[in-house]
Structure formats: C-alpha cells, structure tokens
Length: 324
Ligand code: ATP
Image (cartoon, rainbow, N blue to C red; front, side, top):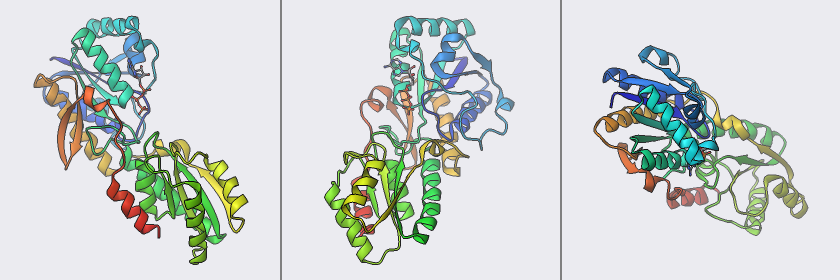
C-alpha cells in the first residue's frame, strides 16, 4: 500500500478532525502518501481529492466538525456510483481507504471492498456510541459532557422557579447519551429506548419527587424513547394528570454534535488513526478499529454493522438507585 485515502461520512462528530490528523500523520511517519477525500462518498465519486502531509493538519485536533466535510450520498448506493468512485480512486493512485463514520458508511465500504477487493478500514465516529465492537465511539464523550453542561444550566433556572423540565437528547435508537448524561447530571428520571417505564410509573415518580421536597425536576428523554409520546406530548400529559407542576420542554438538538472535542475523544481518535493505518499496512482489510478494556481491537465490519450496542444493565440499575 502506497497511498491511503481518508474521508469522513454520515453524521459528523467532535473528534473526527483528530482522527483525520492521526491518519495523515501516521502516513507521513511511515512514509506513505495520504489523500483527503472531501464530502465522503460524494466527493469520492466526483474526484474531490487533496494530498495531505503532516503540516496540512496543523491546529485541527481541537476543532469540532470535520475539515474534510461530510455528506450523505445516494449515488454510492448504486453499482454505477461505486464504479465511478473506483475509477476516481484508481486514477488518483489511491490503493486503500480509511473511513471515519457510522454504520451506514461502513456498510458502503464493505460493499465496495466486496466488489473491487479494495482494502478498507473503519474508524467509528458518531456521538451515539451505538457501534458494536467498540466501548466508545469518537464524539460520544464530548457529546455527554456538552449535555451534562447544559442540564446543569437548565437545573439552575428550573430550581429557581420550581419547574419540571423534559430535556430531549440525541442518540438515535439507543439510550447511551441519555443514560450517561442523565446519571452524570443527576436527572430525576431518564427515559431510554431500552427500557419502557410507562407513563404511570413516570407520574408516580414525579409525585414522589414533589412530595419529598425537591425544588425542581429534570427528566431526560432519549430521542428514540418508546414511551409513545414526544417531549411536547409528555408535557401536555403531565400538565393534565399532575397539575402541581409547571412544565417546560427543552430539545437540545444539534449543539450536541458540535464543540471542541474532549481530551478523551482526542486521545481515542489519535490512537484509532494510528491503528487503522498500521493495520492496513499489515495487510488487514474490512475491519473496524475499536476499543475495549482500554485496548485497541479490530472487529470485522460485517460484525460491527449487524446490530447496535445497547446500554448496560449495571448503569440502568445505578440510575434507578440514584433516582429514588
Ligand atoms: P450516522 O452515525 O450519522 O448514522 P452513518 O455512517 O451511519 O453515520 P449513513 O447516512 O447511514 O450515515 O451513511 C452514510 C453514507 O454511506 C450514505 O449516504 C451512503 O452514501 C453510504 N451508504 C450507507 N449505506 C450503504 C449501503 N448499504 N450501500 C452503499 N452505501 C451505503
């Protein structure tokens, strides 16, 4: 392998830049060429390439987002689109790929490898932390710290007015962000897709909380929660059935995807980038780099994309105990 192409794809996450930097610098260290591919698979199809050396990634480790931009690309889902991408890569002399993204991006890379026997290596970049084969994805730590910071602020105003807040957080179909940030910020209840508390239990819990003399209540609601009502409907429901509360809603939205990455995410991204390039040079392909018990591991992409990880039971139990 003489020239590696690196790109970010799907939803962006804080720490992707640190991963790009790591891939580029590892290539420089090992004296092989590195090419940045802009806008994910879309840029690959259009030949939007830029050679990158160690200096071209100065001062990006601390920045959120991705300097290579990201995109979703329908064309790459077609055989013709992938052929076009392959032609562009061959013309540029790129002979291996590092893809930084989520499940969809990995599925595309796997298909591409099957069709063209093109070496690919994945690095998990998503705030949702939902990828099998890694205890942590790049961006998750930053996101939960952002959410905890915001909930702390919401609590200041909630307790000044004795209010109940429903705070909706991201996380797709899993409750990692909600559960971790909820425990970290001391939320009264945490509604996650993995566990449907039911509306009755929510009302009981809120009643108890009020009786026990709490001056404010924060309920974290994961966007993928299955209680059957969104945060606005929950507000109406509680106002109707529990008029003792003055209820407010806050949907945190895309702020959760932005911001400077935490040190944890920067270090994780740096480690994963080195491992991805070294693994390709060792002749490995079709793997995703992950971390478990603080050791970097490789999981076949075909395994990694099979399912989402779920939150662990032990943390649910801790949360149950903390919310009594
Ligand atoms: P996120 O964490 O934001 O979901 P992701 O990588 O899962 O990130 P997707 O939008 O699912 O994001 O996928 C990114 C891109 O990967 C798609 O726009 C498409 O170009 C490509 N892709 C996804 N699934 C496939 C597939 N089955 N075959 C070919 N390409 C795919």
